[in-house]
Image (cartoon, rainbow, N blue to C red):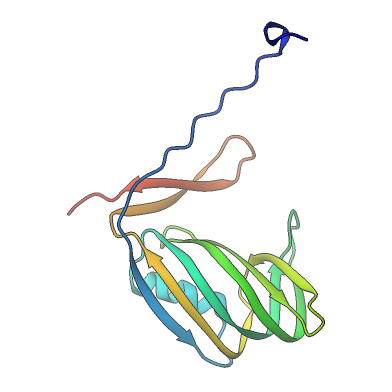
Length: 155
C-alpha cells in the first residue's frame, strides 16, 4: 500500500495548550473526613475555577469508586494507602481519579465518589490557575461532559 492508497482519517481538532501561572494550596484532612466532600468544599470555598491535584498521600478505611465503564459504585472496607489522587478541579465540575493499595499491595483505582473516609491523614497540594476557568461541555464523540479550558474574564 502506498501513502496515496491510505484511507483518509477523521480530522480532530488539535489540542491547544493554554499558558497560565499557578499558586498552590496545602491542606491536611483528618480522620473520618470524606475525601471527595472535603475536596468539593475546598473548591467551592476558595472559588477555584481551574485547579489540579499536584500530590496527595494518606490513608483510607473505606473506599468507594466508580470503576472504568461502570454505572454503579464498588466499595471496600479495610486499611488502604492512597498511592495516587489526580484530577482537574473546578467549581464548574471536577474530575478526579483515586488509586489505593491494600496491605498486600493490591491496587484499586477509579473515579473518586463520596464515601472515601480518611484513616490517619490525607495531605494534599493543589495547584490553582487563577487566570483560567475549567468548564464541562458535552462532547459529541461519546456524549460525556468533557473539559473545556477558557481564559477567565476579568471583572
